Structures are given as C-alpha cells and as structure tokens.
Length: 96
Image 1 (tube, rainbow, N blue to C red):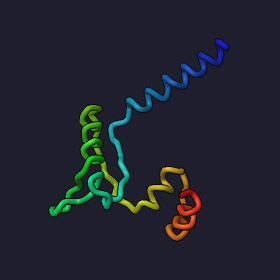
Image 2 (cartoon, rainbow, N blue to C red):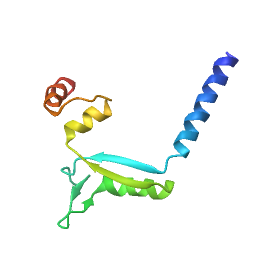
Image 3 (tube, rainbow, N blue to C red):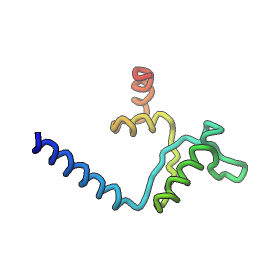
C-alpha cells in the first residue's frame, strides 16, 4: 500500500511540474453561441467564455490563445480523435 501511495504522489508531483512549466493556454471555440462566445461588430471575440478564459490566463500569468474552429472539430479534439471533416458528422450524431 505504501508503494502505491508513493507512486501516486510521484505521479502527482510530476504532472504538477509539467503544468507549472506551461506558459500558454489554448482555448478552442466556435464563436456562434452568444452570450457565451461570439464576435462583436469589430470582429473581436466576446462573451462569458472569453471573459472567463482571459481571467484564468491573467490569474495564472499565462498567454491566452483562442483557436476558432467548428463545433464538430472540437468534439474530435476533446475525444482525442484525428479524423477527417466528413467523418465528424456521423460520429457526432452517434455520440449525441
């Protein structure tokens, strides 16, 4: 049991050091869902998610990068899949 606890503690410390070494946060979004995320008349991103992400970056002293993509592409990224665009619709409907 002590070996398992030490292993878990070591993995936790290792993963913490990797996160602490990170200097950039990348957020994926589709700016079509106001009031959470959308573009204003000047073409700038705005909304609750944008404000929250910027606050997280400011609190953690990270550089924020916003990556705009389609919702279907976000699903494949979140599930760790790398598939072509025409396959995403079928997979999205099966998962939804």
